[in-house]
Amino acid sequence: MLRNIKAILFDWGGTLVRCGRQERVFYACIDAFVEHLHGRGVSVTGTARAVLEESFLAAMNANQNVENTQEFDTSSFLVDWAYNQAIDLRVGDEPDALAEVFWRPWVGCLDLMEGVESCLGRLVSRGCIIGLVSNVAAAPAACEAELARQGLHSLFHFVYFSSSYGIRKPSPRVYESAAAMAKSAWSGSGRGLVESEMLFVGDTPVADIDGPAKMGMRTALVRGGNWSGDLEELRTKPDLVLDSVNDLPVLLE
Image (cartoon, rainbow, N blue to C red; front, side, top):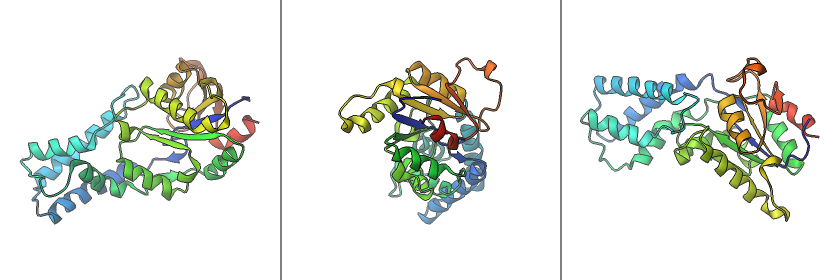
């Protein structure tokens, strides 16, 4: 059990939601983007579409490297693809708008784990600051829409989507930013919040345990997502090991 935790920072995928359907949706994203270009009068050959699919899936695979600290830049990726395929994108869409079009089909592909909404509600009702700190390539607008669809958006005091900042866990800058957001959310209480009063909860040891612990945060590792191994294999031991985030309200009493 842990005492004196004032702020809880949650990972998203593998911790609060299941991501098993996400990869299949990537194909829908590619199709929707190509259809959007066709609707704008931009021709995309079968070869160009095949290149888009192959390069995007390869980029997503590389992006999942746990030591990667640079988030995938969808806008730059699409502009580069179009340039290399001699496709003129100057059809009234800015690169960021094209990225939003690309990621729209992604909304709806994450499956909320059982009991999560109730668990977060209980923690908020106790006065805890709740934050979301997620490595996610999807455009920020799509992430906001997906969080709202899950019914969680109003529960979080702040969110950090790596696609909004271009930096992923385990970059120290992510944890510094998340800690600053938590402190800002807590500031109305009349006294300061320190890192030792923050709990970082996630399913990836490198991203959700090692980095936060170096910042002085407490940590909780969730089994079954990206980790289901032996504690002795971890270079940083978490303060808590959870079968589910639903265990937290009892363990933090």
